[in-house]
Image (cartoon, rainbow, N blue to C red; front, top):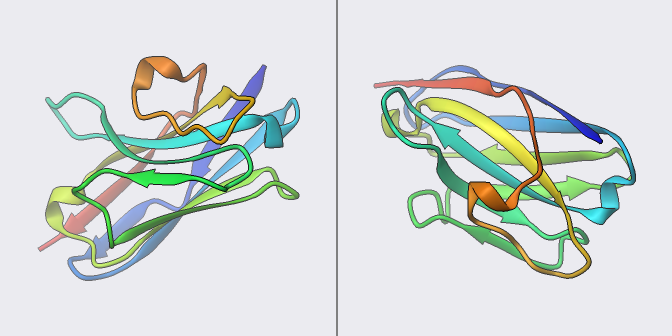
Length: 126
């Protein structure tokens, strides 16, 4: 089992920045590929970005590419999502997710992930 806890959400003005953190406990964090997703009211959960277990590979949705950056610190069992140039349409609950992986693969589909955090709210005002 892996437990994931997100933090760092909040209210920010358009154009501002936030950094989300996702702390993992349980088994060896470095064995897990990680992803970030978001879900706005009455919308489906949306892929934001993902990082492979060793951080060799990252991948982003077109809507955040160039503005958001994923990183991970395996020594701290934490993955980060740096969000810059935020827009009102980025408003959502942000979730981190984990799945065991033996490669540099990144995963973009929610169903490919085994573990999920409880989410953290990000609100961007115009």
